[in-house]
Length: 218
Image 1 (cartoon, rainbow, N blue to C red):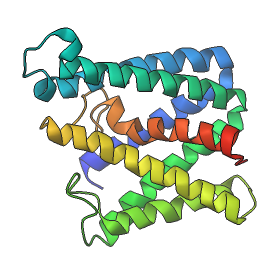
Image 2 (spheres, one colour; image 1 turned 90 degrees about the vertical axis):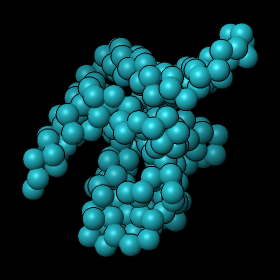
Image 3 (cartoon, one colour; image 1 turned 180 degrees about the horizontal axis):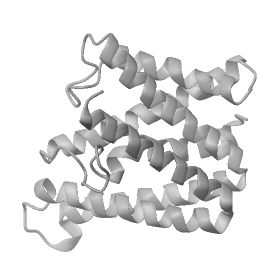
Image 4 (cartoon, rainbow, N blue to C red; image 1 turned 60 degrees about the vertical axis):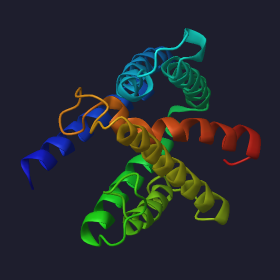
């Protein structure tokens, strides 16, 4: 195990434990933690997009950087609202969603490293088709861990969550590539910024809120 991988693993474990504590303690602690996390994500979002979108000096209302900042703030408000609604459904269900994302990331990393192969997209050179397949496969393991029935509806739910997680990762990768930055920040050893770590999760949360409350999953 390389020094960088070890650092990344330790950081991931600490983050996961902290997330579990914030989810389980109570609703107020969860809400405060969500505000702090999303504020940091917004700051990193503004930081990575400054180089590309602030090049043209235009009136505020027409300024592309202002629009990107507004878009980020608006979306993160949706994430915050969806997070509170999902946490209100129960701490265990929220942890279930978090675990799907974590296992999806792990599956992508393992399959990508062991199998490799053709790149998934030019947006992110490290993403491979085999890694994407591994993400889908590992996401299904969450049903076994939480003792949910392996019926088509539940399997489809996990696959949609994994897909959303991967798309979130690719979207943030696109903006990093556009602005020619490697990481969204340096707050997390081995990971870069907080947005680097939870980019998939913040795309998953609104999707799950819609699936659960408006489509009828779970």
